[in-house]
Length: 119
Image: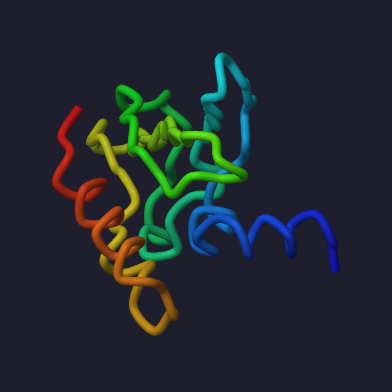
């Protein structure tokens, strides 16, 4: 058990902590910027395909709840993969990931935003 991950799960949505890596963070003029990149693990629902990492979608920025009086922005980059056989671009289906998990209403809205974003 990693105490840092456990702490992050208290501050950030657990699904974000489980499926994204923190690439960097910045604090400028009382504003916290947290940069996340989707982990490279291929989607479980696509096990039948041979996928290779194929970069990221354009990052989206979401304002989150303040921390210690500081405004917080989450900068999130979703990963995409390339099917070696069909050359089709594949991305994680966040509706499937979210099934059976416990999440806040706010994070469900976040996932909906991610799913509808076509960057």
